Length: 276
Image 1: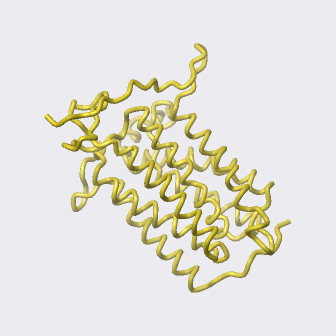
Image 2 (image 1 turned 120 degrees about the vertical axis):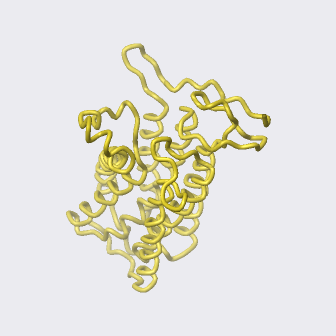
């Protein structure tokens, strides 16, 4: 058997008061939302927008609250529909048992997209410009979420003979890729840095939809690559052409991102007027 790294003995509970517990996964969600809120405030600074940012601070505060709802509701419903529809159809009340786990990023993304569209319609702002800001902030939560997956010892990778293979609790005892950390690096750190550079060093922020398109492309490609190292869900396995569900759901993301980027390139927008 190849050498393996022992999985650290993490306690999935970050804070235990006896009558109340906070798990690392919940803490990752909370931290991601708070840091994303803070970062959005930095992105709408006047120095980046000579003629005024797409949103003001009050609008950002409102939007973050709605996005939190979109992430939770979309993530849960996405998991139910994409991964275990028959199981939840048979036991519909289990849909409400979010404490038992089961969230889909792709579902959460659809929930956030719906929030952006509705909020843009209500406030008469550009949904593409709002999507650009949100897309730049999302990798923060993605990275923290994947680290929480690692702490929980879940969503681990395929068996490997590499020196950095790790034996996860609850697995078959074979050394496996710590694919959660691969995802944290690609979907979190790398994607955040790339979008940050595109925001600060290029004029893409003045072309609504361009940065959002780059996010969709970047995440989709990162997820497709990491899925080659990640163990597919045991109740789904490999699907069409040997692809995993994560890969199949990511292909439309990349195509949609390409469309957004092409549209933004074909129709460059003027800087925004100062929002009320």
